[in-house]
Image: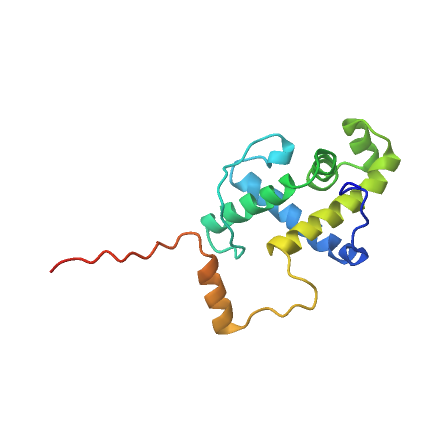
Length: 161
């Protein structure tokens, strides 16, 4: 049984609106960076980074990259559905015509694609589980420092005086 045939957790439907919101934010930020999201046909820079607070240009680049990588984990049909229906705001009929399938297939597969993407966002930390406490104060700052991609490596090389 492949991944598409496996039943997803029904609780993932609770995250659909959050996932759609994150996808729309990702699309807007991608455009602001001067790039089309890769699911729309453009390649984006590749590297292993992760951080999700948006405070600077670098944070925008990191978020766009991380969402792009999550989208890359979906099958091609799911990517196409999300690109057409969520990012380009096609109706189900228009998306079906562009993708080359029936409207019924779009209606059936769109929630599955969103649920799978929600699951990926939860795994990677782009979405926080409902009811999960947000780290407070000092713990949050320490976690942010652990996730920083710009920090230098420590070295034991001493300088002579």
